[in-house]
Length: 150
Figure 1 (tube, rainbow, N blue to C red):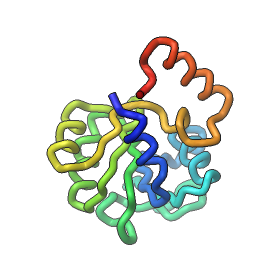
Figure 2: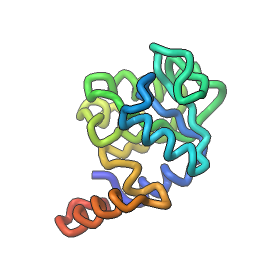
Figure 3: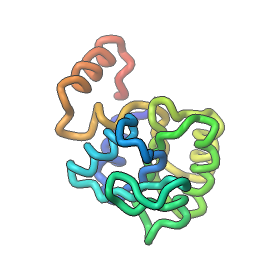
């Protein structure tokens, strides 16, 4: 389980690769992308299947980003995350956040082996301030059940 220290450290960064943003603006990943962008994050969308998404240039992989980023937020199926973590290590990306539905044990293990700070699960929308009402409610429920990162 991630710690609040790791979450706060990740969210204090401003140059973030966003792996898994879609061509379909209705996807949850795109909602997260738009929200983080509105909150001042400099995001670099990564999707090998398109040159542009959400009005921004899209990159085929994290190894092809224009310069270093501070972290990578990954919102892909678990079967694809180990390769993304491998690319993050190659690109010297020091932090990786595997979204709630993106965690694979292999990706988490590889990140730790490569010295990458990893957040294994949790939704960034529950922590990126200002947190919306629905995500505040979700966070409150997790706190009640003892599942909120400490």
